[in-house]
Image 1 (tube, one colour):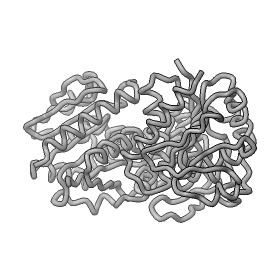
Image 2 (cartoon, helix red, strand yellow):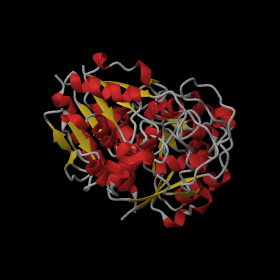
Image 3 (tube, one colour):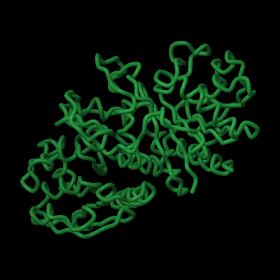
Amino acid sequence: MKKIAVIIAGCGHLDGAEIRESILTLLELDRNKCQTHIFAPDQNQADVVNHCTGEAMQETRNVLVEAARIARGDIASLEKLNADNFDALILPGGFGAAKNLSTIATDGANALVNPQLDKLIRDFHTQKKPIGAICISPAIVARTLADKDPVLTLGGHNQLLDKMMVRQAECTATDTIVDTKNKLVSTPAYMGNAHLHEIQMGIAKLVSQILEMCK
Amino acid sequence: MKKIAVIIAGCGHLDGAEIRESILTLLELDRNKCQTHIFAPDQNQADVVNHCTGEAMQETRNVLVEAARIARGDIASLEKLNADNFDALILPGGFGAAKNLSTIATDGANALVNPQLDKLIRDFHTQKKPIGAICISPAIVARTLADKDPVLTLGGHNQLLDKMMVRQAECTATDTIVDTKNKLVSTPAYMGNAHLHEIQMGIAKLVSQILEMCK
């Protein structure tokens, strides 16, 4: 049974994890009889956004506590994740990836990646374990592994990856981009305005390819 | 194109909508090319629960605003839902159904159902439009339509339906119970401890049967 780590950054696409991308990832891992462990950083969210209006709310919420809604409580703090214990890593998207796991939302190509996550991505890569990245999360992988000459996608051609000097390939929501050398798989999901069943197809393909790449 | 109304009661199974049941319902409706409209009551949640610990949090959250996380902002207040404009109604589960859409969590078989929802369920039923109910939501349908001699399921045999004097059938997460006369379909989903892909099968079957029942 393959052990897969999934990192989510809250609960809601405007200030946390994209819920649908997260659930569809968990669904495909479950269908493929994986042992899935979910992690989130135990820190305050960068912000809290009203998902009806898109406006900021004067509240403080914790990334791990909110992510536990998606995980139904079966979740651990990111600091407990050790690449040695897992076969692959998957990062669903949502603005939380750009706000809570990195500073991409504010700093773009100069973003900092959460140091624990930065180390984890390098660890999985060094151990030749595959990494799947969905939606905006490929930008995190790009920032961390830029020196490894990765190929990733954010859907359409995206200046963010240009500015990071990272190669990119255009991709629709039903498809994935595979970097065989670095064992990276990415799919754009909600980077565009695809239908939910199309996004499901892309995520199912990503999970299948990640599992094939596991040693 | 069939128009389907989905009512969710927040975002998180302990104080709102069961997220996975909600997303899987939306996925199946999208796969079947339905026009889906999501609704939630514009009212404060009965409570806010920390999904890591299961303990109450000293916060106030609005059901509609939190449900918008699942809906990605594409949601309307329950008071705007009119059965005349839709072909079917689907109610995902989660404790929100028992706390925010009804008082089942505190009052059991004597629960009050949100008056708008109570009227909507009666309207869909009177217009011979199918109603799908997932997880604990069949108990809401049971409470509203008890005088119509419905048959519903909450998974295993459940005293709540006995006390409501409503007929029940046992059902696994991969399956559904169909009440042809009343055009009701129910599936237990997270009433038990089934795997996510099993719950997906039950919800896919429910959506398929609901769409077949649409005039």
